[in-house]
Image: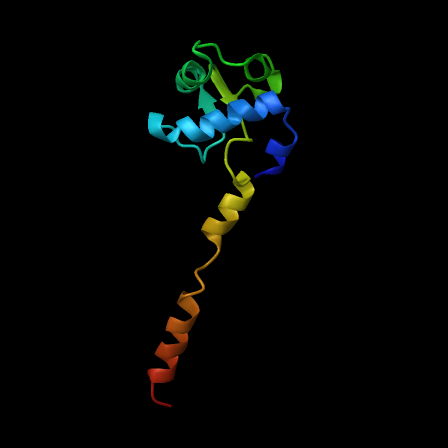
Length: 107
């Protein structure tokens, strides 16, 4: 879990968990942090039977990311910075291949 997630109330965690659980089957990319109203409404329908997105998301100005888009950094299982670090880290398998290549060249 990421640190943002740990700071949520139990009810907020339930909604984030619903995004994580139902999002992939609804075509949502749950590795991102910004979601639109049209992406969140089906989650609310699935979870609560109503299309209303929770107020802790829609009424918090710090979560606004443009018209009808909301930042929910709690959704990715790892923090976005950790995801970027793993994507930019070179593969461990690349080093032995280079070593073998140099070992094969005559001195």
